[in-house]
Image 1 (cartoon, one colour):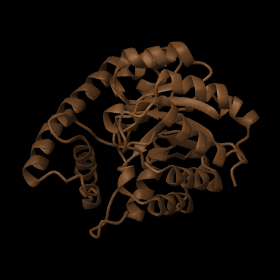
Image 2 (image 1 turned 45 degrees about the vertical axis):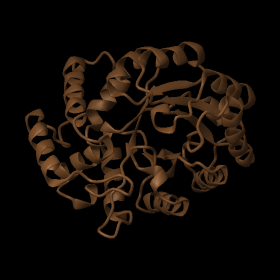
Image 3 (image 1 turned 120 degrees about the horizontal axis):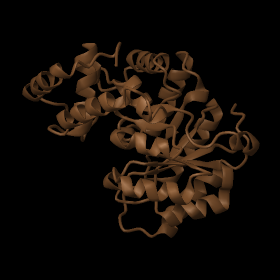
Image 4 (image 1 turned 60 degrees about the vertical axis):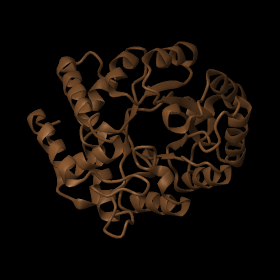
Length: 313
């Protein structure tokens, strides 16, 4: 059972380090490959990650049922991953589903929950987003859980506005610990930081922006590239003045340029497949489609000169 309390949450502002946006391997039947999933999570923690964020956008969260996600989180814990290092992503259109995932996160003792706004209906007012968030918060009020508000409008088409953040802080204070800004707009991230940080952390998803945000006090991140470049991404997020900064940024830029030639999520998983030799990483849930053989070979050729190696990144 989680021991999160308002007083305990006050001791931590924002994410306490790098939380990779965990990708989800699939077996030949399209089910979550538990063995590979758990091993990947353990590997990331062993390489210095503070925690993990399963079933966000990079993890294809909305493509999995609530039951599948809850079972997979239990698999991680049973496989030796500390529940206190899990940031459970909701990624649900139905408020009842978001409540189920948040309550389950409480039950297993997760670090917190990354709360995405509902993403099916478009053009909804802030009031609607707040109503959705409020129902989740009230359902978890008996055992408060850390909450990271998730702004990714290019995917959801439903933003988490400044007004929503301000009202959530007014209503729930220290329960709101961070905003994850995945819009990829540094000016927007800076505006959030200038208005809200502290008391909350503002963490970005676009890795080249990590050093700038770290200098402003954000020493955490939820990152997709961290699945296969955890040390590099952790330095950018947590050590903005490291001697390796220019080299790390150049590597990140080169990788992003390669990935930009392909659909993003299939390409991210293909990198994992190329590094590990495991077919589980090539598979995606519909409607996403794996890279075909020709695209996979192009990706292999483009990555080869970058020298990516999970043991030395």
